[in-house]
Length: 81
Image (cartoon, rainbow, N blue to C red; front, side, top):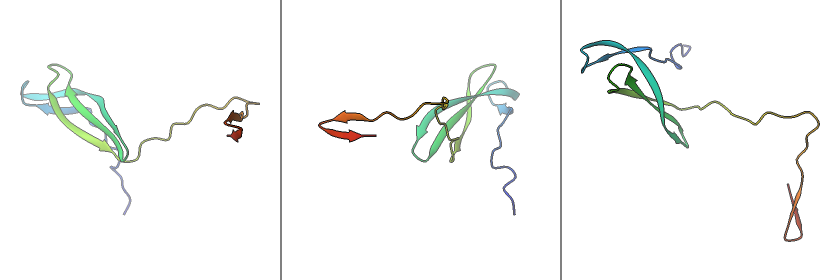
């Protein structure tokens, strides 16, 4: 069975303060070793409506420039890459 809803992101949630479904804003709360923790807030009243944890954060690597190489540095007489 495939994981169809593994990356589900809410666009609207029920807000108990507004008493109806409202658009939500997703806010990054924490970056953990196991993933990232996001919080959903109501776009109207900013009430916290829930949270979700992304267990596999996207791999972010620095953009590589053509012709660039890692330069060794000398620390205490040893070459460190």
